[in-house]
Length: 77
Image (cartoon, rainbow, N blue to C red):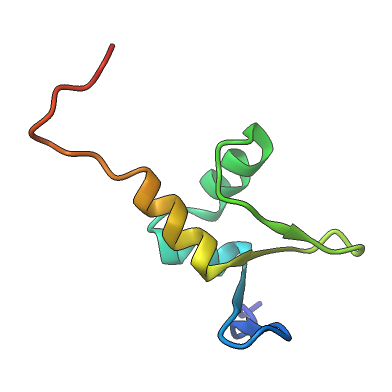
């Protein structure tokens, strides 16, 4: 089944993506994205009464930026 097109909520400029599209936008598989959500490691999401999950594209951008690393700095162990 094809993914629905991105949806705009009532807020101007707000774009909501379903899980498959959000995962693709972030360069991840849908299963990895589902796992991150269940583990509380993923970006904020919106869950409607019918259990459908959506992600605001602005939240995805913020989540990606927060997970950015600087390759010149050593990583903590």
